[in-house]
Length: 128
Image (cartoon, rainbow, N blue to C red; front, side, top):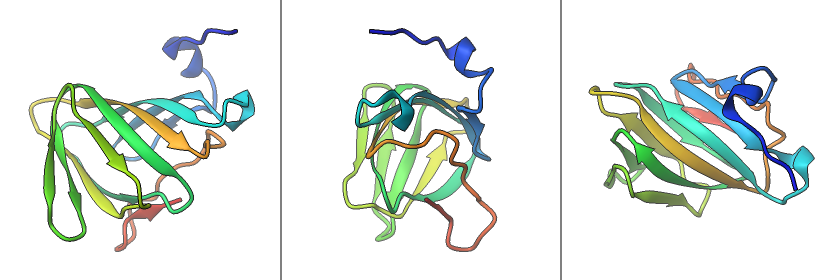
């Protein structure tokens, strides 16, 4: 058994600024649990095109609000109490409303190494 605090993660390489927000990688591949858990902050008013080609992801919103849009144009509202699940390596847009940051608990399978970062500059979005 072990515990880990957000403040402790911020002092490590497992605290990642991914461009339009931050990610505290609370559990990583190194921990041997078979999945990753992150405390993810999506900056207010931001839009990111993302895809996880090697990971499945589920995100549970704990504060703030926004939306996730798939590549067919279907938009799903995200607010506290909403989980969205990327169960097919879905290419998607993630947007946070302008009123404030959106905070998510993100779970990845298989686990992340923990230091991966998005590159949001390309036309096709960021993928890893």
